Length: 293
Image 1 (cartoon, helix red, strand yellow):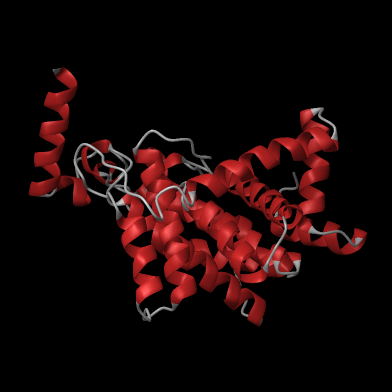
Image 2 (cartoon, one colour):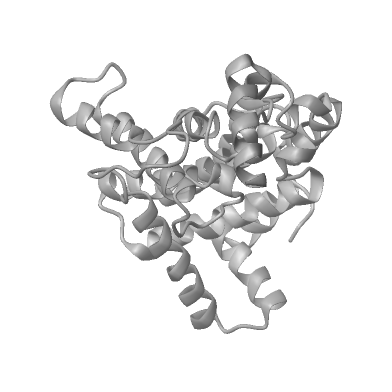
């Protein structure tokens, strides 16, 4: 993959291709797979995302500590019965993000995109766009390919690991990937996709990773819901013509630097932030005793 946002823009514009076409070309070189084989693998990922984003919209899973159970159904029912402040579309999108988080907490099948802790954001983005704009699977796969390209840049300049970079590296990365995918699926330019990804990361720069008891549940599920909101508002900004003066590769690099500056207590250690509260430590102690038993 190319090294900078400008290099990607230049190649796409010079060759008259989409960002997802550039990503696919590079992936086929590296994977030694045929196009048909690679797309078939992406279809499997997409099918998992479809299922996880809908698993708990109309049913409730139960987990040991009941920290996040039933949020998807509660929110899905809410948008059917009332007129939400943020609108039915956005509430349903957040409900789909909750659903994947709950599926993960219940040991169901998810696609880590890019991590389990942020796995609700991409499915919610793809499925909400599908429902709103009647998009077919080919278009959704183009969105997935775009997200891969964004992820490759983040991987080059920063990290996806909450233990290294905080939740900005997990939910921030997923949101940036989703924002670019949304722009691509709606016919935006490569410049707009990269601007959307930049704005998304900027919005979440410095976010701590502080899961209670080290479980990928609380506050992770809320950050998946807010992550889909972040991706959608950033996509709208970019497609309206709002630009990030800092290119995406530099934004990603800055995220990596900020992650290194975060204190270790708020980098997935379960010691600080929400994990360090009285309630968080109580649940952690119960969890550790349960594991030892």
